[in-house]
Length: 156
Image (cartoon, rainbow, N blue to C red; front, side):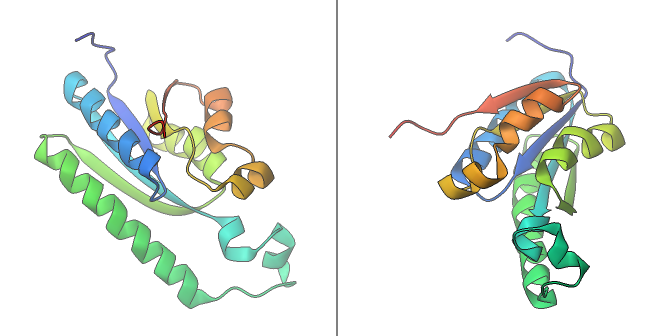
C-alpha cells in the first residue's frame, strides 16, 4: 500500500452512516502511516441557537438540557470510534466541541492538532440542511491547508 507519510489525521463525525465510513477509512490511513488520529464531533451552533446567531444575543432561548444531551451523545459516539481505533493500535484523541463545523474542522482543529490530513464524509446533514448551510465537506476541501479525503455513501 502506498504510504503518504501523514502523522496527524483528523476525522469529523456527526452520527451519519457516511461519517462511520469516514472513521473506518481514517483508521486504515492512520494504521498504514503510524499516524495519530483525532476524532472530532462539532455541535453546530445552528442546531443549538436556531436560524441565526442573533438568537444567541437574546432573541431566542437555548435549552441547556438539550445542549447537554447533544454533547453526551457526541461524547459517546467519539468514544466508540476511539475504541475501534485503539483496537488497531492507533494513538487517538477525541474532541467534542461546538461552533461552525466547517471552520472548526477546516481550520481550528487543524491548527491546534497540527493535522496534515482530514477524512470527512461527503454528506451527513439532511437535504434541507445541506441547502441552507452549504456543504461542510465542500468548505473543508476548499479551505483546509492540508489533504482532504472525502468518503461517499454507498450507492442505493
